[in-house]
Amino acid sequence: MLTWTQVYTPVAGSLALSALVAALPVVVLLGLLAFGRVKAHWAALSGLAASLAVAILVFGMPAQLAGSAALMGAAYGLFPIGWIVLGAIFVYDVTVKSGDFEVVKDIIAGVGSDRRLQVLLIAFCFGAFIEGAAGFGTPVAICAAMLIGLGFRPLQAAGLALIANTAPVAFGALGIPVITLATVTGLPVELLSAMVGRILVLFCVAVPFWVVGTMCGRKQMMEVWPACLTAGLTFGATQYAISNYIGPSLAAIGASIVSILALIVLLEFWQPATIWSFEHEDAAVRATEHANRRVHTGGRNLRAWMPWILLSLFVFAWGLTPVKTFLNGGPAGHPNFLSGVSSISITVPGLHKAVTRTPPVVAKAAAEPAIFVFNWASATGTSLLLAGGISGLLLGFTPLKLLGVFAGTLMRIRKSLLTIGAMLALGFSTRYAGLDATMGLAFASTGVLFPFFSPLLGWLGVALTGSDTSSNVLFGGLQQITARQVGVSPVLAAAANSAGGVMGKMIDAQSIVVAGVATGQQGNEGSILRYVFLHSIVLASLVGVVVFLMAYVFPWMIPVVTK
Image (cartoon, rainbow, N blue to C red; front, top):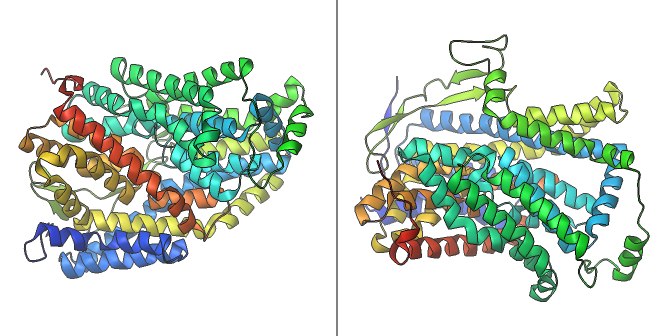
């Protein structure tokens, strides 16, 4: 079998020059999207071509291995990522086709017709719940589509959903990023959970202000400061408490539920002095609409919310370990009737264990596994499709009409699914070629400034892979090794990888494409990237400042490894 060992300084033995060359695929992708105004699928294919060229011609990766890595990434892009997008948009389309989304709009208007309150409720609070339960781009797809339905313009809906989906990411999918980080580093999961919660607490409070300020400016944001503070403070305090005293699994979900309830209670007693609307909307007309809004019966309200209630229940259930285990065929030694059918592990021919990572990226040389898991039953996208299908039947759709809605959804996002596949092909070829490791080593070589750059390394990992979990797998070990070399707490550095990574979530290519699909902006992904890019950089840098201060000024905030 063909094997290959990664090389991290192929350009004249220089880490700096090698890192610059390794960054070329990312520069091509983001540059074409943001500045070249090239359609996403062409930008993705160009970035993929650059990645393969650098991997083969500069880093010396055999072409066969590079091609296999790209094909594995493309498959992962379609499943589970594309599967999630398809399911999320299907649920939304069902509610629109049935007419029930109009009732949802009336209900939300009854709570608060002010656009600032709507973005807090949907993008921040509800989005955090979906992130905590599912992750993998699900909240962006759902919340951006809901904002569009409420009357937000596509670019705003996409950008605001992306910015709002930051605070809960480290504890998304029932804490999988932090749990994975503990597995990779060998550090206690409870310490990593506590550290991530401490780093992010200020950002949890700040993000609602940031989102509203981005949408309407500082002056208008300050008019709803009680709502921003209520949403952010309750979310931050709850996530901090759960992550520090219980664990990572329920941190985001619990925080989002408390935040939703607190905001709804506040709005029962307080409303902004004026109803803020977009420039293209007539404020007086919206105020009249709010005063004369339709009030529906309890049964009608329940029917309208039923698809979203089912979605939340299904997504939450699918995230529970016992449910996942059952759907994957049962625990080891006690298989059920789904064993060998619902979860199929496919070893990628010629790639599995063929690429070796070496120190200092890892503690000791290790061959990289390449296993594609087709777990169709336990995949989050399956729970979304079931929620949409059952909702459609309960709302009066015939099976044939429901199939027609699904076919329409599939046709509408078919190009975007291919784009997501190309994006992930780029990410996987970068990873297996070691380009990501070279860029990571460049960040890790910053010496005393390493605590500042540590979160930026996590940010880079998420920007490359689209996943905080994947970023922790890529760089968690490197963070720990480098931290010990420069005399910084390994717990702080490893947690910083995950905490900084959440700010990369809004600019990773996968999320940008998902947001474009949800808001009907296929081909306009560059505008979305430009909308959020500066926010991502600034917030990631602020995380770096917080981690730097914790390392050298407030070390008492770092939990201590006692074993």
